[in-house]
Length: 69
Image (cartoon, rainbow, N blue to C red; front, top):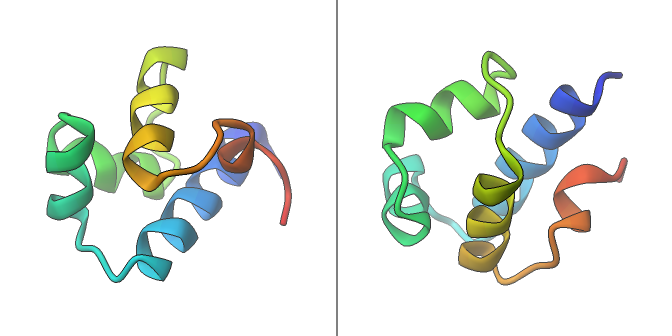
């Protein structure tokens, strides 16, 4: 599994655990909803800045998005 796929899987899992739509997460992380969709499908890779913003929105450490669960 690639790091991009691990990130995508963890992003979707954590978003769903919070019962948030992609749009809700995007609003909290101040990114576009379509970008969240692309990240969750491993179509795009996120910059470190975006990883940090998403982690902050989810209330987790960035490492939680980058490690296999």
